[in-house]
Length: 624
Image (cartoon, rainbow, N blue to C red; front, side, top):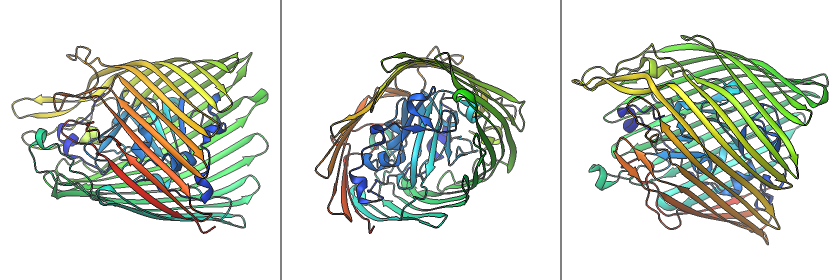
């Protein structure tokens, strides 16, 4: 469902990082085969490590090696290659946008960084991914379908879990620099080592670009200058081994982006800080305990006609336990204690407010009589609402020759962001707060078949997600153009997903295909397609490793989509990218990436152009 407020959709803007990846780590990373050559391990489906082939929820994983190998210029480029994922943007990748999973977007897609939600508590509910450069990312996992029983509020369309860089067990360092189209320049330094029982990692990166003129001059009729962007990011990770099976860690991430938008007088910044302290303890042979204390603060501001400034804070204490039972069964249980708050100033104020968001959760999974079972239950208590109970039930059955049948049923909910409850703009064309908003509710069904053999993996999934009591921005005073958020919307998506990857004889390949029917079931919608959602998505990529070099090619396709704010269909498009990497010697390597090879003109929001052809080259020095 499209939750956008008319003003917010066009003026509540955030940068979108356009940094291109230059190879990091040791020179051997140039030759590293992607993780698909082994058995990928995921944690998102159960909260503890298990092979991808054992996961009952539908999951995609992108490892550090794959991030470097892909040459993806930014996080959103990385995400759009995943099954069922769509990315929209008001212009280039340094501009505001949104991530869709199975037709659901904004606050209905939960985004976690190091276990902490970064979905804003403002009147957008979006996760502002602009400051998350791929250079600082260790791995990404995407769970499709509602998994509120595991992750709580917001996990309706799916969950994106991002882990920042971690310390290595051996000394390694790298210095990178790169230049490219549109005045782009990047530089980064990263070092990791282990001293006794202490592991350390630290990094700094900078990215600048002149950007592109985001507005389509014909459709907008407005001044159109290039929208520049600059990002500086510092990250730190420390882990102390206290005793065998017991460790204490600190992770700190600080990223600040500055951007311009539409003209020289409009711009702003986003400053994001995430700090996490955690302890891992193995208590006896069967019990693993993880406890973490985290603080996430996002300061976001915008200048110009719609001057805005928001500060979202989330403080979180999590205690998670995994117990190994007999016959390979595992049980999980724990609690989340969270405090959410927001402060604002400028046009469209949200009064300073906060609330608690606490939860108890438990789960169990294992095998019985050749059947895999996974059950998760969760109760969330969020300030201002009654307690919400959610559940996930998954089943799998191996039928031989590498094939497995999979089915699941789940429920989900989403509590309104504080901005949806209290956002207000006085006067004509203003906005009224609505503290009576209710949480959204959803339920999902899935059935599929999986085949795996060595490095080869194929999964086909039929899915359906239905949501009701969704929020939509509606006009309540047509004379003065005044509106507010209300619980009047409902939606349903159903479709088929195919995903596959594998490797053989120096060739690595991946592909996915999504055919979906995203229907707006709200009163008066007459079964219209959900805004900005495509019926067909496809990705394909191939990589060849030979003689110390790697060549890669990727394709992304989207069918047409409808944008109600422009009142137009956005045309179908296919974009092709190329990448190349090669070691010069044991210390030096270079990489090249070409985006939008055929200079395809396309839009993901009406009136806003996406990036044309671009070429980027980088050089990496590794002293070790």
